[in-house]
Image 1 (cartoon, helix red, strand yellow):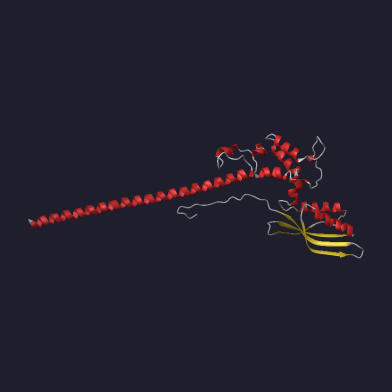
Image 2 (tube, rainbow, N blue to C red):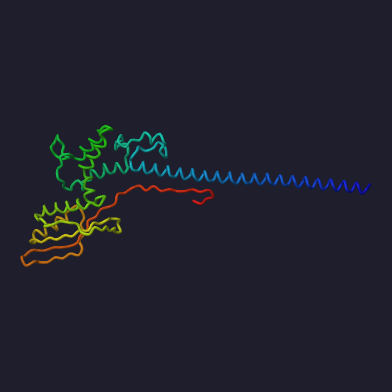
Length: 288
Protein backbone atom coordinates (compact mmCIF):
# COMPACT_ATOMS: atom_id res chain seq x y z
CA UNK A 1 0.00 0.00 0.00
CA UNK A 2 2.79 2.40 0.93
CA UNK A 3 4.60 1.47 -2.27
CA UNK A 4 1.54 2.37 -4.40
CA UNK A 5 1.21 5.74 -2.64
CA UNK A 6 4.85 6.50 -3.29
CA UNK A 7 4.49 5.62 -6.99
CA UNK A 8 1.37 7.78 -7.23
CA UNK A 9 3.17 10.76 -5.67
CA UNK A 10 6.15 10.29 -8.00
CA UNK A 11 3.87 10.25 -11.03
CA UNK A 12 2.14 13.40 -9.87
CA UNK A 13 5.53 15.11 -9.35
CA UNK A 14 6.72 14.05 -12.81
CA UNK A 15 3.52 15.33 -14.39
CA UNK A 16 3.85 18.64 -12.51
CA UNK A 17 7.41 18.93 -13.75
CA UNK A 18 6.28 18.29 -17.29
CA UNK A 19 3.57 20.92 -16.96
CA UNK A 20 6.10 23.35 -15.55
CA UNK A 21 8.56 22.68 -18.39
CA UNK A 22 5.79 23.09 -20.93
CA UNK A 23 4.69 26.37 -19.33
CA UNK A 24 8.30 27.62 -19.30
CA UNK A 25 8.69 26.63 -22.96
CA UNK A 26 5.49 28.46 -23.93
CA UNK A 27 6.59 31.54 -21.92
CA UNK A 28 10.03 31.48 -23.59
CA UNK A 29 8.47 31.29 -27.05
CA UNK A 30 6.11 34.16 -26.26
CA UNK A 31 8.94 36.24 -24.74
CA UNK A 32 11.23 35.55 -27.70
CA UNK A 33 8.51 36.47 -30.19
CA UNK A 34 7.73 39.63 -28.22
CA UNK A 35 11.43 40.59 -28.11
CA UNK A 36 11.83 39.89 -31.83
CA UNK A 37 8.77 41.94 -32.71
CA UNK A 38 9.92 44.76 -30.41
CA UNK A 39 13.42 44.85 -31.91
CA UNK A 40 12.03 44.82 -35.44
CA UNK A 41 9.57 47.56 -34.54
CA UNK A 42 12.35 49.68 -33.00
CA UNK A 43 14.46 49.22 -36.14
CA UNK A 44 11.56 50.27 -38.34
CA UNK A 45 10.89 53.33 -36.20
CA UNK A 46 14.60 54.25 -36.26
CA UNK A 47 14.79 53.74 -40.03
CA UNK A 48 11.68 55.84 -40.68
CA UNK A 49 13.04 58.54 -38.37
CA UNK A 50 16.31 58.62 -40.37
CA UNK A 51 14.35 58.86 -43.64
CA UNK A 52 12.20 61.71 -42.32
CA UNK A 53 15.29 63.54 -40.99
CA UNK A 54 17.11 63.33 -44.33
CA UNK A 55 13.95 64.29 -46.19
CA UNK A 56 13.59 67.40 -44.01
CA UNK A 57 17.25 68.27 -44.68
CA UNK A 58 16.72 67.92 -48.44
CA UNK A 59 13.59 70.09 -48.34
CA UNK A 60 15.46 72.71 -46.30
CA UNK A 61 18.40 72.75 -48.73
CA UNK A 62 16.15 72.99 -51.77
CA UNK A 63 14.26 75.84 -50.12
CA UNK A 64 17.51 77.72 -49.42
CA UNK A 65 18.61 77.35 -53.04
CA UNK A 66 15.24 78.45 -54.47
CA UNK A 67 14.99 81.37 -52.07
CA UNK A 68 18.63 82.44 -52.50
CA UNK A 69 18.53 82.39 -56.29
CA UNK A 70 15.29 84.36 -56.39
CA UNK A 71 13.21 81.93 -58.42
CA UNK A 72 10.29 82.28 -55.99
CA UNK A 73 9.24 84.69 -53.30
CA UNK A 74 10.50 83.80 -49.84
CA UNK A 75 8.37 81.13 -48.12
CA UNK A 76 6.02 82.09 -45.32
CA UNK A 77 7.63 79.50 -43.08
CA UNK A 78 11.13 78.09 -42.91
CA UNK A 79 10.63 75.98 -46.06
CA UNK A 80 8.40 76.07 -49.11
CA UNK A 81 5.14 74.22 -48.98
CA UNK A 82 3.89 72.21 -51.94
CA UNK A 83 1.19 74.81 -52.55
CA UNK A 84 3.74 77.66 -52.58
CA UNK A 85 5.89 75.87 -55.16
CA UNK A 86 2.86 75.22 -57.38
CA UNK A 87 2.01 78.93 -57.34
CA UNK A 88 5.62 80.01 -58.00
CA UNK A 89 6.19 81.62 -61.40
CA UNK A 90 9.59 83.34 -61.86
CA UNK A 91 8.26 85.54 -64.68
CA UNK A 92 5.54 87.02 -62.46
CA UNK A 93 7.98 88.19 -59.77
CA UNK A 94 9.34 91.75 -59.67
CA UNK A 95 12.81 92.49 -58.30
CA UNK A 96 11.33 94.39 -55.34
CA UNK A 97 9.74 91.13 -54.17
CA UNK A 98 13.05 89.23 -54.01
CA UNK A 99 15.56 91.66 -52.43
CA UNK A 100 19.04 90.35 -51.64
CA UNK A 101 18.73 87.30 -53.89
CA UNK A 102 21.21 86.33 -56.60
CA UNK A 103 18.74 87.29 -59.30
CA UNK A 104 18.07 90.73 -57.81
CA UNK A 105 21.76 91.41 -57.20
CA UNK A 106 22.61 90.57 -60.81
CA UNK A 107 19.75 92.48 -62.43
CA UNK A 108 20.24 95.49 -60.14
CA UNK A 109 23.75 95.68 -58.72
CA UNK A 110 25.72 94.34 -61.68
CA UNK A 111 23.41 95.71 -64.36
CA UNK A 112 23.84 99.25 -63.04
CA UNK A 113 27.53 98.96 -62.09
CA UNK A 114 29.21 102.17 -63.30
CA UNK A 115 32.56 100.46 -63.92
CA UNK A 116 30.97 97.88 -66.20
CA UNK A 117 28.72 100.48 -67.83
CA UNK A 118 31.78 102.54 -68.75
CA UNK A 119 32.94 99.84 -71.16
CA UNK A 120 32.13 101.09 -74.63
CA UNK A 121 29.92 99.08 -76.95
CA UNK A 122 28.60 99.42 -80.43
CA UNK A 123 25.04 100.56 -80.84
CA UNK A 124 22.51 97.84 -81.49
CA UNK A 125 19.05 98.51 -82.84
CA UNK A 126 17.43 96.55 -80.02
CA UNK A 127 19.27 98.63 -77.40
CA UNK A 128 18.28 102.05 -78.78
CA UNK A 129 15.41 103.87 -77.13
CA UNK A 130 13.15 105.01 -79.96
CA UNK A 131 12.02 108.00 -77.88
CA UNK A 132 15.50 109.43 -77.32
CA UNK A 133 17.43 107.85 -80.20
CA UNK A 134 20.15 106.85 -77.72
CA UNK A 135 21.09 103.64 -75.94
CA UNK A 136 18.84 102.64 -73.07
CA UNK A 137 20.07 103.65 -69.65
CA UNK A 138 19.81 101.17 -66.78
CA UNK A 139 16.94 103.13 -65.23
CA UNK A 140 15.01 102.94 -68.50
CA UNK A 141 15.69 99.20 -68.84
CA UNK A 142 14.70 98.57 -65.23
CA UNK A 143 11.51 100.58 -65.68
CA UNK A 144 10.60 98.47 -68.71
CA UNK A 145 11.31 95.30 -66.73
CA UNK A 146 9.28 96.33 -63.69
CA UNK A 147 6.34 97.53 -65.79
CA UNK A 148 6.24 94.44 -68.01
CA UNK A 149 3.33 92.05 -67.81
CA UNK A 150 3.88 88.41 -66.90
CA UNK A 151 3.82 87.44 -70.58
CA UNK A 152 6.46 90.04 -71.53
CA UNK A 153 8.68 89.67 -68.46
CA UNK A 154 11.06 87.18 -70.14
CA UNK A 155 11.61 89.50 -73.12
CA UNK A 156 12.21 92.45 -70.80
CA UNK A 157 14.71 90.39 -68.85
CA UNK A 158 16.60 89.51 -72.06
CA UNK A 159 16.64 93.19 -73.03
CA UNK A 160 18.06 94.10 -69.62
CA UNK A 161 20.80 91.49 -69.94
CA UNK A 162 21.75 92.44 -73.51
CA UNK A 163 21.69 96.23 -73.20
CA UNK A 164 22.91 96.89 -69.66
CA UNK A 165 26.31 96.43 -68.03
CA UNK A 166 25.57 92.70 -67.79
CA UNK A 167 26.65 92.30 -71.42
CA UNK A 168 30.26 92.96 -70.31
CA UNK A 169 30.50 89.83 -68.14
CA UNK A 170 30.19 87.19 -70.90
CA UNK A 171 32.40 89.38 -73.11
CA UNK A 172 35.15 89.39 -70.49
CA UNK A 173 34.80 85.77 -69.41
CA UNK A 174 32.60 83.58 -71.64
CA UNK A 175 30.76 80.63 -70.15
CA UNK A 176 31.85 78.18 -72.84
CA UNK A 177 34.63 77.57 -75.32
CA UNK A 178 33.94 79.67 -78.41
CA UNK A 179 36.92 80.01 -80.73
CA UNK A 180 34.89 81.86 -83.37
CA UNK A 181 34.00 84.61 -80.88
CA UNK A 182 37.64 84.83 -79.79
CA UNK A 183 38.84 85.26 -83.38
CA UNK A 184 36.12 87.84 -83.96
CA UNK A 185 37.34 89.82 -80.93
CA UNK A 186 40.92 89.69 -82.18
CA UNK A 187 39.85 90.78 -85.65
CA UNK A 188 38.08 93.78 -84.10
CA UNK A 189 41.27 94.69 -82.21
CA UNK A 190 43.30 94.44 -85.41
CA UNK A 191 40.82 96.66 -87.27
CA UNK A 192 41.05 99.30 -84.53
CA UNK A 193 44.83 99.10 -84.76
CA UNK A 194 44.88 99.57 -88.52
CA UNK A 195 46.44 96.20 -89.25
CA UNK A 196 45.13 93.25 -91.23
CA UNK A 197 46.72 89.84 -90.63
CA UNK A 198 47.28 87.51 -93.54
CA UNK A 199 45.56 84.73 -91.61
CA UNK A 200 43.88 84.32 -88.24
CA UNK A 201 43.54 80.98 -86.51
CA UNK A 202 43.50 79.57 -82.97
CA UNK A 203 46.42 77.63 -81.57
CA UNK A 204 46.22 74.10 -80.22
CA UNK A 205 42.81 72.62 -79.60
CA UNK A 206 43.66 71.44 -76.12
CA UNK A 207 42.07 72.89 -73.01
CA UNK A 208 43.92 73.57 -69.77
CA UNK A 209 42.56 74.42 -66.36
CA UNK A 210 44.49 76.59 -63.93
CA UNK A 211 44.31 76.83 -60.15
CA UNK A 212 41.53 79.44 -60.30
CA UNK A 213 39.29 77.08 -62.25
CA UNK A 214 39.67 79.04 -65.49
CA UNK A 215 39.84 77.15 -68.76
CA UNK A 216 42.15 78.48 -71.48
CA UNK A 217 42.16 78.58 -75.27
CA UNK A 218 45.61 78.68 -76.83
CA UNK A 219 46.31 80.86 -79.85
CA UNK A 220 49.26 81.94 -81.98
CA UNK A 221 49.80 85.64 -82.63
CA UNK A 222 52.20 87.15 -85.16
CA UNK A 223 52.40 90.85 -86.07
CA UNK A 224 54.79 92.01 -88.76
CA UNK A 225 54.53 95.74 -89.32
CA UNK A 226 56.17 99.04 -88.44
CA UNK A 227 56.69 99.75 -84.74
CA UNK A 228 53.71 102.13 -84.48
CA UNK A 229 51.20 99.57 -85.75
CA UNK A 230 52.74 96.71 -83.76
CA UNK A 231 52.61 98.71 -80.53
CA UNK A 232 49.05 99.81 -81.31
CA UNK A 233 47.99 96.17 -81.65
CA UNK A 234 49.58 95.28 -78.31
CA UNK A 235 48.12 98.33 -76.56
CA UNK A 236 44.62 97.54 -77.83
CA UNK A 237 44.95 93.94 -76.67
CA UNK A 238 46.03 95.25 -73.27
CA UNK A 239 42.99 97.55 -73.10
CA UNK A 240 40.63 94.80 -74.22
CA UNK A 241 38.09 93.71 -71.64
CA UNK A 242 39.02 90.14 -72.44
CA UNK A 243 42.23 88.93 -70.80
CA UNK A 244 45.11 87.77 -72.99
CA UNK A 245 48.16 86.15 -71.42
CA UNK A 246 51.32 86.06 -73.53
CA UNK A 247 54.09 83.48 -73.30
CA UNK A 248 57.02 82.43 -75.51
CA UNK A 249 57.27 85.97 -76.85
CA UNK A 250 59.71 86.82 -79.63
CA UNK A 251 60.37 90.45 -80.66
CA UNK A 252 62.85 91.44 -83.36
CA UNK A 253 63.65 94.26 -85.74
CA UNK A 254 63.48 93.25 -89.39
CA UNK A 255 65.77 94.59 -92.11
CA UNK A 256 62.90 96.57 -93.61
CA UNK A 257 62.48 98.45 -90.33
CA UNK A 258 59.46 96.43 -89.21
CA UNK A 259 59.00 95.48 -85.57
CA UNK A 260 58.01 91.84 -85.71
CA UNK A 261 56.19 90.34 -82.76
CA UNK A 262 55.24 86.69 -82.35
CA UNK A 263 53.97 84.86 -79.31
CA UNK A 264 51.75 82.19 -77.97
CA UNK A 265 48.87 83.52 -75.93
CA UNK A 266 45.93 82.24 -73.92
CA UNK A 267 42.38 83.54 -73.55
CA UNK A 268 40.07 82.27 -70.83
CA UNK A 269 36.55 81.03 -70.26
CA UNK A 270 34.71 79.19 -67.50
CA UNK A 271 32.43 76.20 -67.39
CA UNK A 272 28.75 76.92 -66.67
CA UNK A 273 27.87 76.70 -63.00
CA UNK A 274 25.18 74.20 -62.17
CA UNK A 275 23.52 72.90 -59.03
CA UNK A 276 24.64 69.35 -58.42
CA UNK A 277 22.04 67.02 -56.99
CA UNK A 278 23.29 64.26 -54.72
CA UNK A 279 21.65 61.01 -53.66
CA UNK A 280 21.84 59.51 -50.20
CA UNK A 281 20.86 55.91 -49.49
CA UNK A 282 19.66 55.06 -46.01
CA UNK A 283 19.74 51.45 -44.93
CA UNK A 284 18.22 49.83 -41.89
CA UNK A 285 20.80 49.29 -39.17
CA UNK A 286 22.55 52.64 -39.61
CA UNK A 287 24.72 51.73 -42.63
CA UNK A 288 24.27 54.91 -44.73
